[in-house]
Image (tube, rainbow, N blue to C red; front, side, top):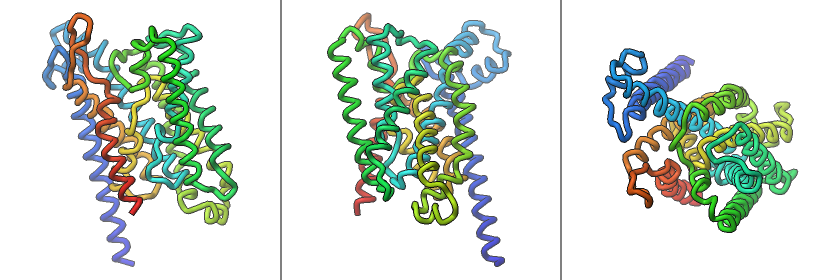
Length: 346
């Protein structure tokens, strides 16, 4: 009994140490993310500006009007995608599951592209954009659930159907863009995923989603733990399996649609974050879900720091633009996905 108590105490200390490390790292990334840009600022200048103690009005305006909202959007979107990925992995009992691979991101992006192309929506963003992304995500996950989940709870079949639907929806998006080539320039970044140009309007739209859906997702950890044990065990402990699964899938779809409608289809970030969190805290969803949100927020901000460090000239005028963050996460995530696929196929 004493050894068990000591092991539990050591585990709790390790979890607290990791939480402190991640929070401190996130604070450092927060400052660096704001400091980077065409106008380089020192961390000291960033802190002074955030405290309204910076004497340079120009620098203060850059930080408050341009860079701070971008950083806040990255934190919120990363946390939402990481939590969605952890929920999907729990529901499907598939370590390779993430919003992009199960079609939720593709459904949201297709609906956004249709809205902007055929119904006169603006790519600069409006209040309708998250609603259209929400519709696309919910319809997609509903179709995948109806087609892919059998009464036996076949998680593999569900995942394969999700991949097929995701590929089909991505092809539809490409077809729409090819037939309306004049819209490619304004919509392409939504299909790749980008934080460029994110301002307070974007933050004002995403933070209500964040405040509502993230707590709901965290409170669903009990159902996530039950489903990870298998349908038979979950039923044995009194969990309504079909209702719990449908509810968790809906939560994941809402989290994904809320993030995708603001930053686009940032790929693989919802896969990497939960896996790193799982290595830290284990399978218990009560810790896995919040750590997945924290780690993925950390990763998205870090990826955007890297994307801002990689710039390229635009074709018109030779201006320099940062690489879309979705391209960076794809470069990082594709090898990670192949590693996981090879590991779990052995």
